[in-house]
Length: 310
Image 1 (cartoon, rainbow, N blue to C red):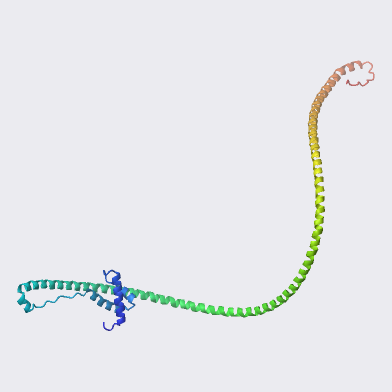
Image 2 (image 1 turned 90 degrees about the vertical axis):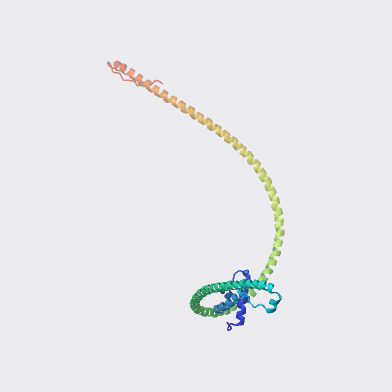
């Protein structure tokens, strides 16, 4: 216990007091929690915590002493009663000491359980840390490979930089040529501005002529409007005549249709009469044939063709 560093001991006790007060002084703090706050190793923390727990549970025990002779002589009866009361108090103190010892033993058992759990937790943390170290080593291997790739890329970039420098020299030369062309363009622009001024003056002169021409055009337009008005009136009259002619033509078409119907009707009647006339002629010929045979039998004179009756 004496080999523990005072600063470490002070940190552990301060952490235990802090956690004990935070718990409302109801339960003692766990060793693992104290170790994390004090940032101490498990063995030192458990040793200091044992001492701290004993300090929290320590209770002064009453010690029985002999009655002084002077007191016996002064108050024999009162002393006997006082002694009896003192014996009872001593017994109560002894019982309290026994209870404290039992509580300390239970606390020690709980402390051993906490230490076992803390060691198991620490072993798990160690395994996790070892796994993390393995992952970091693997990552380091990957980073080394990436570093090699970066070196290769850097070499390519440097080569591209040299090419870019050469290109920059070429661009600078071309820029000089463009500046010379720009100067020539400025000279040409000045010449064009002069020509534009002259053309503007010419345009102003043309604008005067255009105003005169516009006035003439307006007068001509007014005359054209009058002509268009007259033409519109004439077109209106022509349209009216055409409408009347169309009505007359429609009426003539209706009359022609009626005439065609009447002609068709008369043609039908004519066909019927023609058929009747043909039938009548046939009947007459059939009647005249026997008579002609009888008359022609003796002399057989020459027959004169008979004109059909109309």
